[in-house]
Image (cartoon, rainbow, N blue to C red; front, side, top):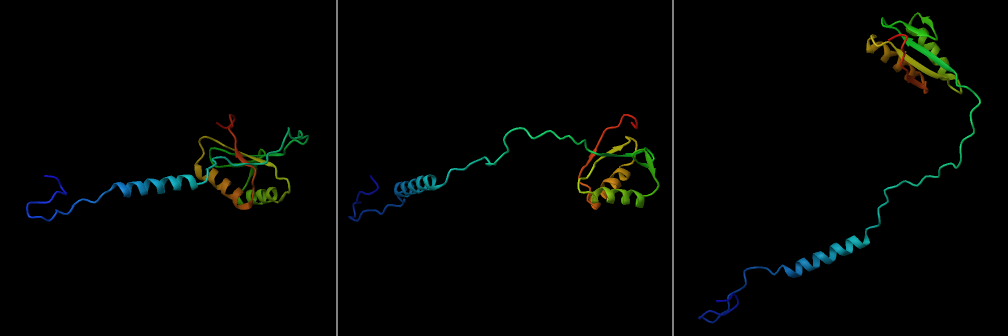
Length: 140
């Protein structure tokens, strides 16, 4: 017996399932409209870059070397720095320059990290921007 066929009593039996075809058709139309209206995504950033090579610099950069020995002794261009206040005054003078010199920090491989971190923290706090770690065969 089919679902919609009348019984022997006369009244047709109601359908128990909802017809999903129109609902699916409407959802597909909405998805297609959404896909069409979404703008194209660009995965690049457009920048105006300079053209050509920059002129060569005739000025050699000034380099300040800070060595941290295995026992925590700090050397500024080969001269022993007696205390932290002297180091910070030298770093403040470097930070105050318009064209800051490069600061090369060369720690010994046996030195405690807190000594090196203290020098880097002082340099950052005082505004030294051109600082970098350099390997040093003499102290290693």
